[in-house]
Structures are given as C-alpha cells and as structure tokens.
Image (cartoon, rainbow, N blue to C red):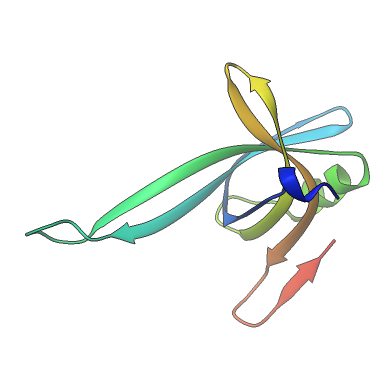
Length: 102
C-alpha cells in the first residue's frame, strides 16, 4: 500500500450503481459543526467511490442505502471532473456491535 495516497472514509451508502465488473457508489459522511451565535449545523459530504474485482462482488451483496461503511482506498481521477476513491478494502457496520470485513 502506498501510504502517500491512502484514504480512509467512514459514512453511509447513499447510492449504488452496479455495472459489469465494478460497483460505483456514494458514501455520505455527516457531521455537526458549531456556528457562532447560532445552533449547530449539520454538514454532509458525499464522496464517489468505485470497487472492482472481488471487492465489487462483496459490495454488490452487502451495500444498501443507509448502511454504515468504512472504505480504504486510493484517490483516482478525474471522474466527471472530480476525484473518486478506488476502494482496496471495505468494512460494513451491520448493527450496533456487528461489523463485517471483506
């Protein structure tokens, strides 16, 4: 693994697109930020990801919108003028205490 180009992203599956030999999906990561003299504000970042090969097969079986996921991968690009994460590893949060690693 090239440590200079490694990304770890945690969030929830938002959308999944399945095609031959690959799966493209969006991971949405939501956090709260403090706003001066106001209520906290919720900010969501949506990051495009791609899984290929055997990892794509795993994502096809496990992915559903709202399911928690942790993705490790490489920055790749451009995809429609932006970068995406090419996944090397994924963990799925199935329940409060259950995780599955693929």
